Amino acid sequence: MKRFLLELNKIDFRNIFTAMNIIFYLLLFKINSMSIEVSNISKSYGTQKALNNISFSVKNGEIVGFLGPNGAGKSTLMKILTTYISADEGTALVNGNDVVLQPKAVQKIVGYLPEHNPLYLDLYVREYLAFNADVYKVSKKRIEEVIVLTGLSSESHKKIGQLSKGYRQRVGLANALLHNPDVLILDEPTTGLDPNQLVEIRNVIKNVGKNKTVFLSTHIMQEVEAICDRVIIIDNGKIIADKKLDKLMIEEQQIVEVEFDLEIEESILASIPEIVSYSNTHDKTWELVFNTEKDMRPAVFDFAKANGLRTFQLNHKNKNLETVFRELTKK
Image (cartoon, rainbow, N blue to C red; front, top):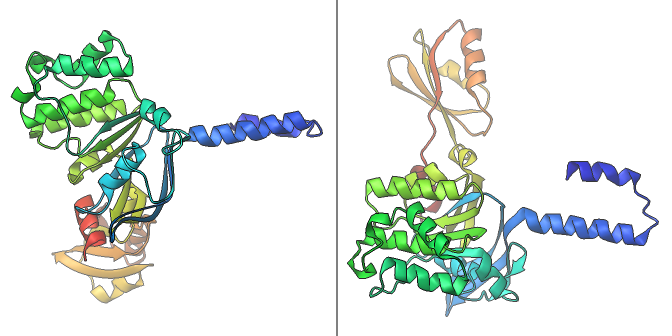
């Protein structure tokens, strides 16, 4: 793209067709650079406002965690993006396709695992996947690929009704992956999995996310920390945070833990730039709180040097995602 823009100076714009081609190319590039575009979406159920004028976009190849308390509007938005329901207002595009005007095109490029995974319990695993493979017109070879990918090989000879909840989730994930979609929308994908299964499915999602866009909701914060590049938090139908994961962790407060070689008067700590508060945790160790995203460890080191102190340790002690989530969504 950069190289293309550099060539613009060499183009004779008196040629109207050349100009039109350039405009088309730029529009095409913009569409293709975004997998999901949500603009001013609102949705109500009676008097209950499930989504209230929300907007965001997701780039190709991003793995985004969509978080919020129960009833915040997560599943509603996912159903809109997958064409199951329509918004009252606003527009949503998936790979440039409008979910209302081009539902079939959206369905072809989206793999969806809903919160309540609908399965035919009387069908065998392979039988169920073969049925859906016929719908998507994909080969039998692909059925075997997704069975291996989701760890279903040992259970694939059973009826779905005989499987544990965790393995039923794997069947749902296998089905979502069956047609090799560009975009995966996963609503609580690891519900019912034991700790070992959690790790396996997280790895599947992360590996798949290397060449797909993944938009997932979950209540398991460790899952988001392990998988996601970015977090969107919704509460009462409104987006209250949309940040890269590492930025979100220090968005509100940055905590620096420092151990000095000598005891100091706490009053002199107030001279450190942008410091908000400080507390002595034990002996010569302090927790310093700053309201800034800028890494304040160099400033603490400079403070120590200016006051004839040495630092034995100097670390970030950031809040975990669960703490940040609770603080942002508390009533």
